[in-house]
Image (cartoon, rainbow over all chains, first blue to last red; front, side, top):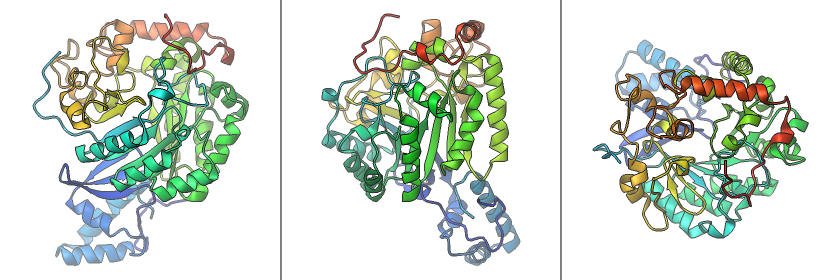
Length: 94
Length: 375
């Protein structure tokens, strides 16, 4: 069973059947899942690209905060919220 | 016919009905009563061309469906072509006709996801509904193979009078089969389902009980399984945004190559459907009269025309409006603002009352040789 709360040591990954894809026709990114197409904005894309199943949530947050010179606490809140929502939809495994 | 809106967004989904052949006889099948014969089916290279055109047009997800798509010998080739085009590929199957080897081949070819139908959580009832002895056992086996292969699984269950008491049990069955997603879909009355409506219609009380049970499970099983719940139109107050809007999100190609805005669109008189044998998919999507017939809002009458929900539900389903009011431009009678709404509900109650419980014997099973019968 998959827990819903994204913890610091969670290693989020996109399960088989869920793919992040750039759509050249519309010029935007999508998260493709069973019977679902979710448009991914620039922030979501940066988070999802790092959900490789080996990086921990803490590492993903560190990386994003460093790359975008952003407040770490704020980044962490955004990442946790997004991944928890996607986990509830079974579009991310934590 | 009304003028199309200025800008037509590309479609996100393609329902590819590879064949109408199917070993099962489910009485709620959404295929038309006049099923297309094998000799009219598009061949492998035609499907490959259409799938390439779909990807170029902007289609993101392809649903390989039927009939039973495993009845096609070239299913693996078609799947591989979808993968080459970068399409998210979903196989919609009864599980009958799939073998352990075929599932491996499909996974290797790049299949993204499988949607497996079940008829009931009770084996005897499931086989009776499918009109196929042993169907339930074979489906369980197919689900095991899909899980062994690591392919993500959705279970689909169509709900009607003979299985509605077990809607919750079917969700639990889906969990036990390893599904990450389950569709609990109350029957939508088109095609064979319309022909069998009196044998399938549940009472309002039955529908409300099942809806409450499944909604409770949705919360309880969050993070374990996603439940997509399709609420019954005949017991609704507002209509569904059918197909996400006519000619807006999805297109359907029949086994012989007719391009339809939805699988029941052929029931609407006067619409002209272009064939992928004569037109490119892009030409059809942009210019075919059938796709432009109900785009935008210009075709609408009251109460839709001035309704604040019109952009959300697009007036509901055109085919249902036609079937129950005689005119496809009317509001879907599932809407409480439709003058036909009460008629629809009383019709449902009368049919639910008239039917004997567990009335499997009364089905007109889906059958290949049957041609459009006089209603």
